[in-house]
Length: 357
Ligand SMILES: *Cc1c(COP(=O)(O)O)cnc(C)c1O
Image (cartoon, rainbow, N blue to C red; front, side):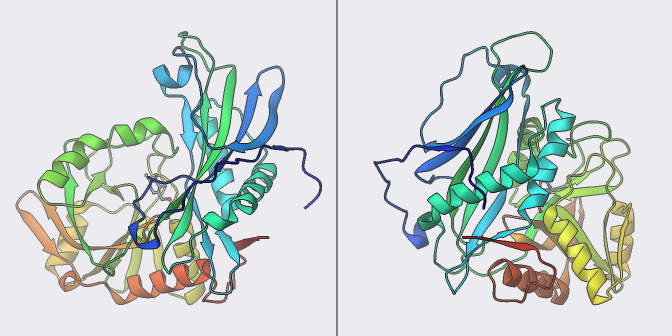
């Protein structure tokens, strides 16, 4: 690493790290965070690592009013030989810039951002958990900070990275979940912001999620916002089906978020010579395949769970039980391969991991 121009202010009040078996998602934060500022005249400037602490913003800061913000989510894993690995982090910064472009936020230098992230993790390496299944969740994000109520892009921003140790997503082993088909609310529409990781999409999903939770489902299946006919995503994960030996996933259409787990699964399947197709999949087609005993597996994919098998899919009075509520063979193989690569247990044939030294 060449000499980085970056300030580092050490935090002298180090926190106690949470117990490995008691880590709740998103509740614990490390001792330091990364910040960089932007103004239209200076561009991005003053990258620094500082003690983790609250930030001060003007109440008129544009983030609060018009939601001009983007975020990312990835993890750092500790291998059994005590290396720290990131999984395809360059893809996260590439996607951050794609999201920013949609929200009229200025781009960051992707390579520099990765260098800053590596430096931050180096400083916080003791925060990368040891225990099997645990990891350090990384949340890069950008907020519009200009105090101004005019409807125009902010002239100032902050780019920050915070770190949060997280426990295993599957403490009690992988168990397939119940999913409710959402046919009233829409997550995102073509031409909207669905393909960007931006706050509003997630706030807009709570209403459907609340109802599904109340009715005993763990997530909702989102349909396209135009015809309410085609499958888009499950909760905040991409979705795959195995129908009659073929793996299918909804094609990217502007309202689907392009997951890095999704991308990796498609690449793995292609490499394994297993038929994988990105195309439109209607709910009707799915129920037809089910009736003909051809719907073999269904699973969501994303950084948090990697693979989340669907055991049951409910749409009004139509109910499907998939693979006897058990994880499918393909889901299991993909899960083992991806988590194996991420944690250094399976050889990384694709150069996906980046070591933090
Ligand atoms: C982040 C996200 C995903 C999954 O992306 P990964 O890069 O695989 O973690 C899928 N759908 C939505 C809506 C998301 O926000």
